[in-house]
Image 1 (spheres, helix red, strand yellow):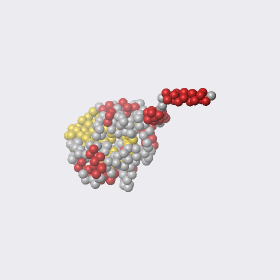
Image 2 (cartoon, one colour):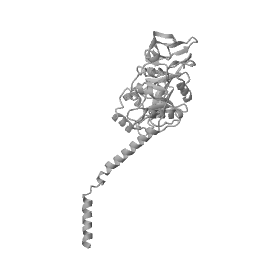
Image 3 (tube, rainbow, N blue to C red):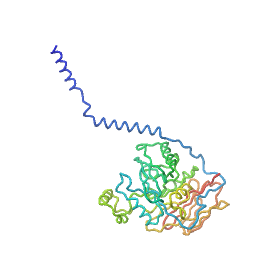
Image 4 (cartoon, rainbow, N blue to C red):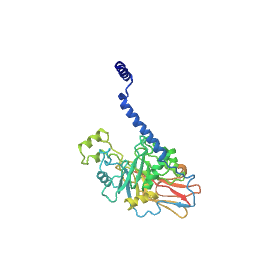
Length: 382
């Protein structure tokens, strides 16, 4: 009997020795488990956090002409920057402080600047400061700006987002008080024209961006009857070297900027911005101008250039667009449905164009000696 028991134990030990142990695969199993959790999470949010939006089926219609610039007063103009990144986010400590950013933009004649850090609303003691955030951590660079948003929120789609998921994000931004802008659509072709025409919930597109300028994006959207605005932004990450040299920043920040190849470059700051009417520079009034489209988009050709002056645009009772400016432009273009150039007025500071029956909207492009200016659409409405 003792022999039988002993033999049974010996057999069990041999069987255990022959059985492959999973312990040596523990790291692989943990990795596969985490990957499985990520896949399940991603599928869940893709299926649950989505919104379908009904887009316009036709272009602008009606006998009334809406001019967002009709109530502009005074002769001054306010330069506003709406896309800049600071060191407030934990993973960007090498970037510039809010105080440095505000000081540099003020020195360059800007009336206000919005700090739009990734995933959070940065704070400041300045009561006129414009608050905002940039959403999107995905590799495809599908980013969205929300200006004036009251509360930040997490990017629930770090790997993949459908068009309906993007609609949900933009709808939430608007409910939190945000003016929603498509960021740098030309960067990695993050938003193609086809995709922009299929999603909704945004009010403007960065058609002037360091990552690619393309004002014609507007025409594909306006031709659908969607009152989408232009946007011009620096998308500031780092200032040029002549600015950084004046900052009192620690050695480690200099070193990280140098290793990241962010030093000794001319930079893209101070070149792309919006212009609002005289006195419109605090957050409430800027937001009102954004929502109504009462602003211009400007791209300067080089940093040392003088700021091109924006015009006054009025529409008469006979539906004639009248443009007057203190600056003589090289060219004034009136652009209509599907990007058709309706009229070109060269070498002048005044121009007129009368709405035709076929015109659903008209937008203007002014080419000055030192930069180009885009207007938002003047359009038909019921």
